[in-house]
Image (cartoon, rainbow, N blue to C red; front, side, top):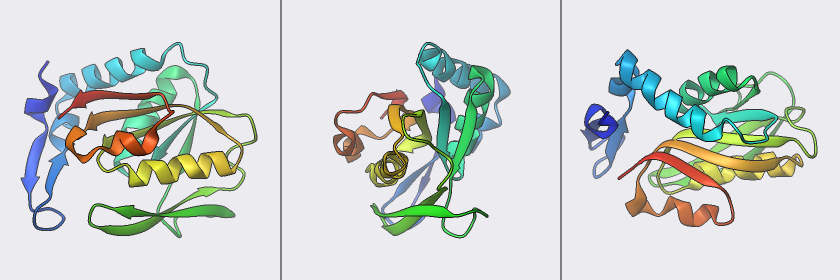
Length: 170
């Protein structure tokens, strides 16, 4: 299946000069969504992991079905002020600004093996911040997976030394 043909480009969003990769067109195509998730799940089926962590919000869409299918717990990584218990946070730069993400302090114990999932690898700032959160709590990032990687933005360079998988590359 040609997943790239299903994902829609939105020019000048969220600001001029950015071409936003809109995965909602893939999500609403039940067959394409199921096939894409199946391929990601199969890639990670034999990994030794305790949890799947994913970044708000589109990462949740990819990470939660993977956690359910693989029989693993799910850990949300969210924007500031969205988690009810005590959190840790990391700030990071985006290709069009800066932001911060948080995770519950008790989400991961030292030695927990975590698979980190997001929908898109662009410049790598957000995912690198998520790696920092997991490692601050003593977790081990055993893999980082994406539905789509924009190779021209070289986000993978910020993740040297990690096991990275992207289902699609542009």
